[in-house]
Image (cartoon, rainbow, N blue to C red):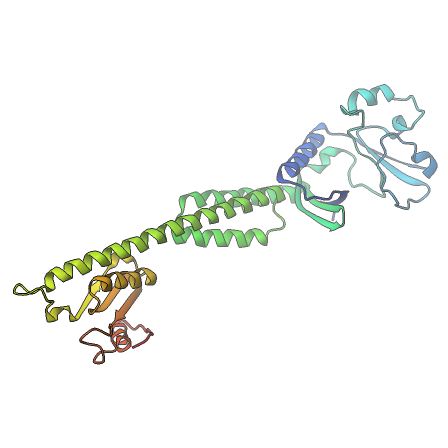
Length: 326
């Protein structure tokens, strides 16, 4: 495929996001330089004398072999040749004394000038064997299409900051799934987005834990206050004993937002003060109703009213179902 390439290289560790972006930046600079691509066939013995040649150890090359150089004429790179040596030193030699251009044995290239590459985007980086990794990239129109889609995706990621709660949870899961299935997007951006989403998920988890903790504390406090209030209502003016009105109570508690654990904890808090009171606590949230019924053994209603039957009767009114013990 003319617009797609792969390149294998020696490395024992994955390429980091910053390194991927650096490679893309270097390639962008070479494209803007509009470097001419030179190629010639040489006897293998002569070609091996080319200065700056990069060849794969152990690879069997044909004789004659085709040599390709980007930005520098190959004749100027032949050891012993004086033609163009000064120009090579001035233009293509890096700070380490090594050529910063590509000079390799290659069976074929698809361009005559680096500007024909247009855009260069790395879409994949992986290990292919021990100590060897591979990058895959797209160029030209394919790269432009990839960058355009990345801009659209980036906008979706930005919108995450305006969301919260369950809506954010759903969007995080959706976008994370799409990233796993979007191998054609720029790899560096994809890895950054994945890291961002994982961070947001961790923040959501921490917020959820804090919200749950606050909800449970609220449930216990609500239960204690209800019990004290009911106890003050139940005390007979003529005695310290509780009146028959303590036998059962039905209470709707909206602030517990249908949280089953919170409603159950509220009931337990009530029974710490009113251990013989039968309870039915209801807590709605949107189109869901949570209901907890309790008939303690020490209640005057024990053996006469089943907590399970009581719950079933309540939920039947809203088309719901429940379970539990009698």
